Image 1 (cartoon, rainbow, N blue to C red):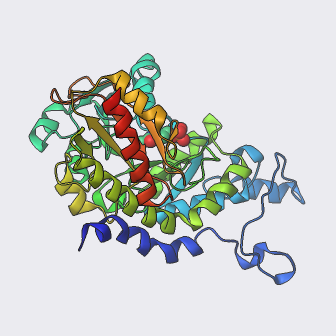
Image 2 (tube, rainbow, N blue to C red; image 1 turned 60 degrees about the vertical axis):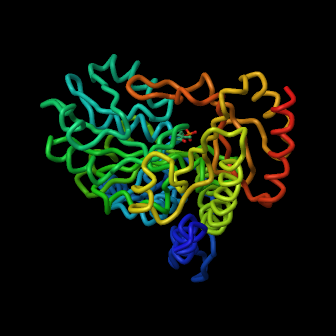
Length: 407
Ligand SMILES: *Cc1c(COP(=O)(O)O)cnc(C)c1O
């Protein structure tokens, strides 16, 4: 398979599913007809015809039913079915953001006196939560090298290890992790494997690789238009689902119906958007990789990216976001002048939307057991590749590199 196909094949294969999932059932539509899309239903109170009906519906709290607004709306539950289908899991809880998905999952599966292993390359706010709130509640976090082998991982497991957390690829440094191996080590030690699968949504099947709980920032690919913030937690089986659903209700975790509707709408075109964007991202990554100003491009589909062989083994596609390190000949100030000069790349956080973005990463990466930057590298930045034409993006970057060299 060519590399262009390797980054986009999984997205193409997803399209038939994405057209169907989470659509209204026939009996949800008026007069026996059928709307193509769910309606946005807003509400707190749900009225019942009598007490018996209210009590019987109340016993269904593990089901996707709308009993009270704080337990989720109909459109939220439709989105939950859709996300569960894409992830290949038993059930999904939608929460207010991707970060809430990470923190809620950690709260559900850890307890005081417990120990948690988190990859050094995790999303920064997940690290902050582990280092502050989780610690305050008596859970000890230890960071591990995302590329650590099986023996090294096993040596870190303790009798009180409750969770092995994974994020593949890692935020900013893009290491692909051996999730199958992590599942083996976690399960041998009686721990659960939680995965932040945001980059791999739709092209990495967490539950076929032994993951217990997969978390998603739906903000990124699913919403896809930089207009909604939303997260999801998907579980492998019914036992995990009961624990999750109980906790989500206790924590008051849900998402507004408008955000859910936007995300479900975004999901319909996720396959075509991402097939196109992932191909363009690879073209731009390759072009940058060949430039003398660039020391390294961190994109899992490039052979020198850490974990490239695992990406080939486990993923049916690639994402839109990747890292670029310049050579040490350039200063951070010069890199910032280059970033400021770009016209097709917006300067901003997040990724996965339809528009290209750039974000300087030098100075913003925290690592405790692995290197955040290699010693032969200069300042770095992250690119998200949108729907723009590859040649336009490359022309913009070429102009930017002239500014870099002149600065
Ligand atoms: C963006 C992101 C999150 C957080 O998602 P939000 O919806 O912005 O809160 C979590 N994990 C990863 C890997 C992310 O990139």
